[in-house]
Image (cartoon, rainbow, N blue to C red; front, side):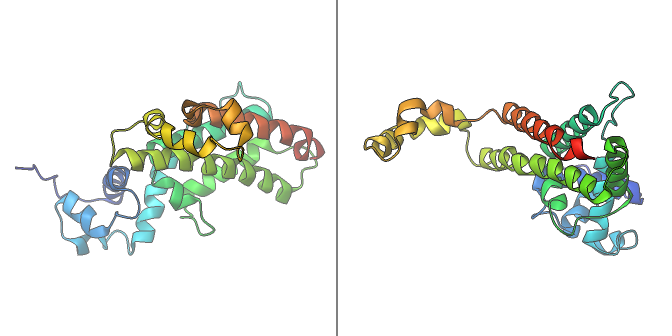
Length: 226
């Protein structure tokens, strides 16, 4: 039978096991009851350490944000530091898909981890004569790009849980249907220039392209004005 975990509890241990569980179940299916079962304890015993699921989510977020590798001293300009931070955020969402819906909200799990991340990024990209609100908007714009694109691999992970098809195979299996839709002249550009295999996007390559494009725009616009 299954070997139960030891029942010694601490906030750090509960948060660590909660992260492991959420990595497997996703945020929607994550419950205090399932966590208690995983730990081999009564559900109510968890509330001695965390008064609510939301409070636990703050600790979970703090734990995974602590894995971020801060930009090193060799990254001396705002663009290279912001680029590094964006890649670290992207990596976190790939490793912990539940973090995306947790953070990408108007009411995120604000704790020391989230505040420390924002403080590090804003301090790292500030310029002389900066407008703090504009600087915050720059940070949120880049983070929003990362979050939006991270929806794609997160959705793919969910899809792969119910099918063995890769994205390439999924599009290929629908090629006959696509040919039928493209037979007329309603979609001339797609019919002429794109094949089903072209629809399966390399998420990492798309992320790098989008990030570079956004940073180019920020460098020519808002960051040149700060």
